Image (tube, rainbow over all chains, first blue to last red; front, side, top):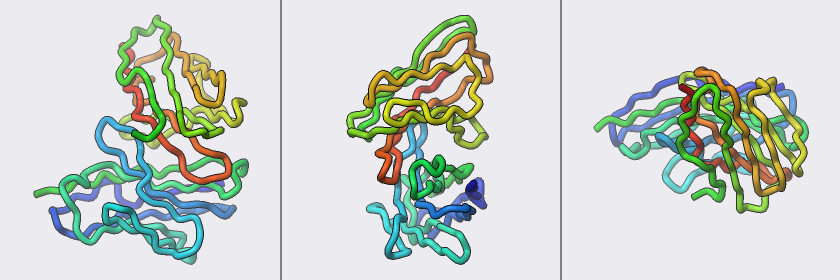
Length: 115
Length: 112
């Protein structure tokens, strides 16, 4: 069994400010970790993922997330946000073994970037 | 464009209608999924197909009926829906032995 908790349902920030979206998870099996982004009236798009290796992973648009095994966290950060980053962000986990269970998504965090 | 295409993008239907949602993936994946996304609620996994066999059905009402005729296509047949079934329905696909899911843009369903 696994669960994902996104600690903030809404995060308002000003443009060019740093932001952190928090995600904690629990699982009885080894998992992959993901952040997805959803823009209005669209599906989810993969932002970044942690599979193995370096615990710090980066996306092409300046986001990064760090896997912390001891704290079972996978927080998403960006040092300077843009208006275009306004969206819903979902943290998700999936068992490494496909038939060990389905993906589990957090409830989502709405990031609103204000000018 | 993610390689997963859903049609229609928007659908309004009465409670006595029958309609179908279609999903097509061009990624060579062997697993496909239906999710329901309602306002103010978590993403709900409805069905999972792996190698064209249904491997998961999360207590979804029988008024939703999935069909996976081949590994590239997935349908969700709808009949006698309720207003609370209004939501964004998302299709996704993945390759079993890799990790992430690829999502379509969704069908916004309104039941009147």
